[in-house]
Image (cartoon, rainbow over all chains, first blue to last red; front, side):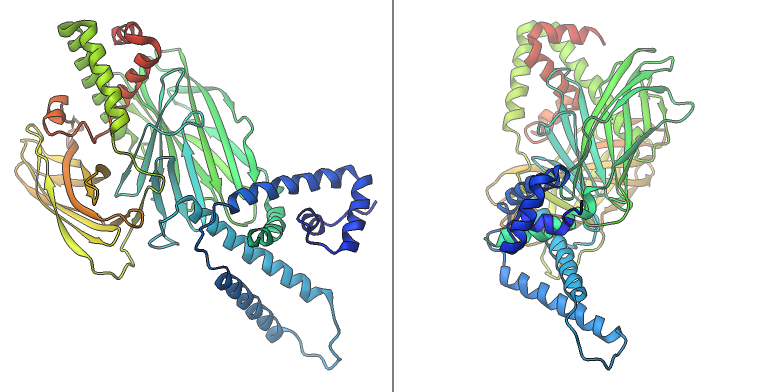
Length: 192
Length: 363
């Protein structure tokens, strides 16, 4: 059995395929357990992303974001034309540029969304230098950020720390006390 | 909704990471004073899109001949934070030779698209024994941290035991209730918190120089004599202090607590200023940190003050403030209690005064 492509399955779960393809995919899912499970996973991720999206800053300039992404795609396509071998044949429509464009859009959107997610975790704060390693302390815990990655550490259980602290040498600490055992766990992150 | 438009493309990107496996391991040296009995990684793994959750519970055994009073484990998430690392410390332990104890922690990792699966390695940075001797590579300077926590624990237990003797159970109970009240009232970092970035800042705003005021602790071996930091908007940067060794012993490390007051008049310990130095008796030196501390937008720092929170002498011994000195300088309302006091407060909360008295008898 030929399965539905992962990309199309993802687009299907968010209602972003044509009516005809939607009917085709639905028919396939009715008889394919593995694709149906995969579609359910995408729906769950979609729900989780929606909840993250609700936390996005209200003053986010979507038009500027859209313009930036479009410009980046155009630059990418223009660069592709510059390095492509010249041909005297009449240009024909091909699915390849579309696939490349979709891929570029996906990567750009993922990057932008990840940045937004991280900023949403600390509303009101903008990093001094986005590329510099930094530590952050807040009432919910501690976090280390470097090169777009993030690592947060908490103690035993999911509770909030009883105390947090930071040092100007780039260390952040959070202290947790276990409700049952009274054991104290101190977690630290280091930017150096 | 525009948010909805982003979801499909993010899902496409998520495909790339959803198949990745999180690998993990625990490494202990061959001559380690603790042995790994079991490690439970629970439901660790990819939780959603680009987020990874790690839940680790280690069961360890004291294989040495001395009591263990503290342990620090290093956590390195390869490919996640270039050069960055984390640690898990458990102070205030009292583990007899041959006994087991547990260390638990949770990690939350977020990463952009990349190749290869993330790896997490847990290793030993140090173990502190009841005689204050130390074992371990100490790459994170955990000997210093754990020794200070242990000295604070001894100071506080001694204080509570003396209080029990002089004021009885009622006096100890009153002290616990005061401690719980201070815990509830102590100013905390808000949801937005504070960011610290090392290195020279790129903020071009000139800002203004603000002087530190110092809270003098009578028996401190270090006297801060002057201090300045530059404040620009909601950012404080490049603090520099002048300190003098007033003791008769050379000093190799000190830590200054840094208290800021905002426009609402709320004071809080915003950060500490640690410094390695070689300071002979009577000598002075400058403590300088090329770093910036950023508060949430809208925060206006009105004033700053500092106090000496710990000192390490060249011979490896330490000075920490007494409870009396902390009280006299009115610091106990802003400074967090020691880890041991937190532990004893929790025991009191859970088991009452009887449980607390029994716990104090163990030491």
